[in-house]
Length: 463
Ligand code: HEM
Image (tube, rainbow, N blue to C red; front, side, top):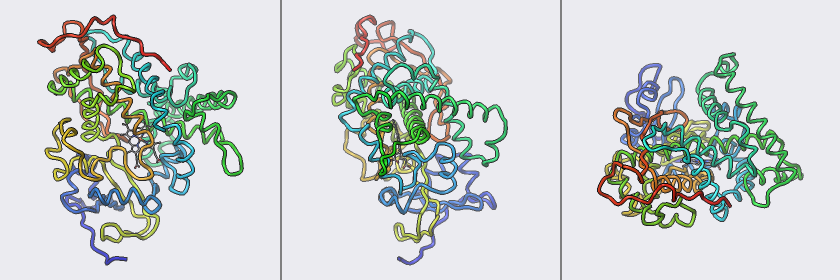
């Protein structure tokens, strides 16, 4: 064991409160500024402390040694009470078995089929859009990504849509974020919010029971997530219980829906407020797609759109702060850490370090054409054994959506309506609106050739 160094404490702590006031008042600035003080910085949360890891190599080490830096502590205890111990919340000892069982649903060879379903959902979500309409962007993207996740991973047929998955997930998402932060007893009070949460949980339970029963009687021949879950057997040959299947489904809907929706909403805002980038995307999609929707085979040719998605993930990584707990006394970067220490890492912090990214606050998709960022410095999907299982799925959905929209629609910001981060479990934007312009009609981007008439837009084929 190396000598015990005194870990540096971040400045600005108040008696009793510690750094809580800074975390509440300006969490992003506070966390992003920690790397100025040391590679591992202690912050005080009233009576408790946490250690924020600020150096990309040390973050990588934490994420790789996942049996020592495990998912645990009060946050995960509460989370597991609400959503069970599915893939995202289970401890390291259960992780390998679950990950091996679920990984086949996310193999690259599945993506082309998923992309076709995504294209279908993008068409469904935008078919009623009107020239000049004002759109609530985050709510539209959230509906879209819920439909995409539900259709690709859990559905062989339309029965999913008879149950309001989106409304229920929205309620569960907010409920989980609230319950993880507030004391446990507040969750038992008969408040309207708690009743809505219980109602949504029951609705989802009914949905997952129906889906599991359908799949058990006639599993599809493709390995989507639910067919893997219903076919899975433990070492004694027992299938997963309905409860375990439910926990995984809710985990995947929660993990996949808001993160991808947030990225698409931020990207639409950033593109709408950067006319030069908008023109570059339109030039790319006009050349590659014309008026047709984007497909899986188009992805390699959509490098500008991909760079916009990367840059959005850098500026606004949906998961901005994650926690771990040490399972034993250990050492990190020359510092001794005791067992049960609370450890935090923040993709937002690394993505905004000025020594890793020039002008980190500037939205500049071009930086992705000038080489890769330094090692371990770009981690919107985490790293190591617990790296996001849906990373390719999420980026494919985002690129296909942005490219397909750009073939026909221009989204313009409205005066006085700015997108601002709404910090909850994820770095999603507060509700904001934009105005839709059909590029085939009188579009504000004057002086550039307009694409063909709207009637040539094709309904994508569903595979
Ligand atoms: C752009 C969108 C997405 C982003 C930025 C994102 C980000 C992340 C991050 C940072 C982690 C690691 C968390 C940690 O270290 O504690 C993670 C894990 C996870 N994500 Fe995603 N995610 C996205 C989309 C998705 C999608 C679409 C799905 C599923 C459909 C998904 C399912 C999961 C699951 C199940 C885990 C836990 C993996 C494990 O522990 O083995 N995510 N995600």
